[in-house]
Image (cartoon, rainbow, N blue to C red; front, top):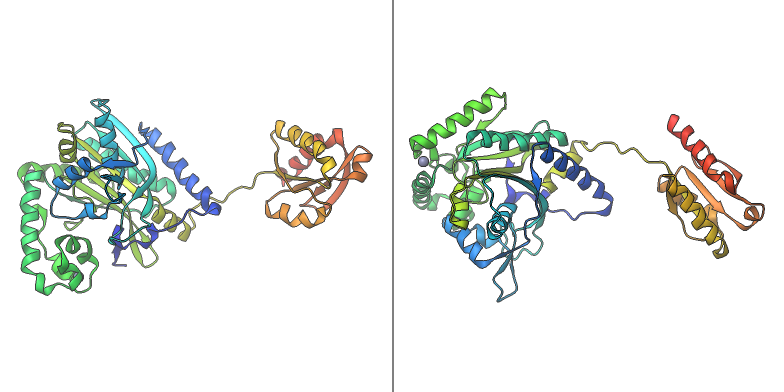
Length: 425
Ligand SMILES: [Zn+2]
Ligand SMILES: [Zn+2]
């Protein structure tokens, strides 16, 4: 296992949410909500739309990469963009609303939009969850943020999640480093493949997983040669504390983020998937982004994770919990005249916490037995003219394959009895 797919090569980011998979998304979201709240984070709903002035400021943070080209612009004239991530969107909202508190711990879950390396991409919707810790510059918050992500992945069952860390340095160190690496790219342009030589951004994005360019990538400059004492010390303290907490990590001096706006600690989470690794999330400190977007000196760090690849890995590794089928009753009437009785019985059952599925009104009720079974119903109640004349309905035990006529007033107790027998099994 050597290859690690990043966002731009990650086909698992593409997935239409199928109705039959909805419960998997709900399972993920439930784990996210519970764990975030346990860590004292509050949910927010960052805006979907971003204005041009915000995009310009993001672009200002780093002119080397062309990440803004992968954002979706709406309309021809309108300078509105769909949110490419939660962080920028949240910051716009937070600082626009003048409700900045000294400290904020927030999380979000929702769709994001990006063209993954293809300018004509029209289907770049994917789903992320993420957390942002605003207002603390301490390494304690750095460690806590990294660990929060790991905790959630562990709750998903992704116990083999691996952590890679790197630093982007302070804006000074980063600037020196990017200039050096840019120069390196220029000097080696003729040795690179056509894709990696096309642009510096392409080189950063693709060279790691490019057969021809991988060696040149591994020999490219690293930030640590440019780091000032403060950046070096900061990174060492984080390493020391992660080790102290028995939190396994690898320092990858070539680790890169899709978004250029980070400074100092950056990190990514990856998991084994088939014969490769998948990047499922990552984050870092973005003090400089806050300053650029808002003009305020408020430190911040966060992480985000992509839900589609997480679901792909969980399906592959069979990590979704086995769903216990609830007790359900399938009910139908054999003619329209009996539908009033049907509604009364349904109401009685539901008022007593019994889940009911109403089938279509039809003379041929036996045809619907398999439908009821496919819906995981244990009992089928048929209201037909012959039995209702005697004040009864037909109750069909689909598990024991046994049916009997039951008095209308005895429906609830007899269904409750059947429920009990089934749950004791
Ligand atoms: Zn520095
Ligand atoms: Zn290449």
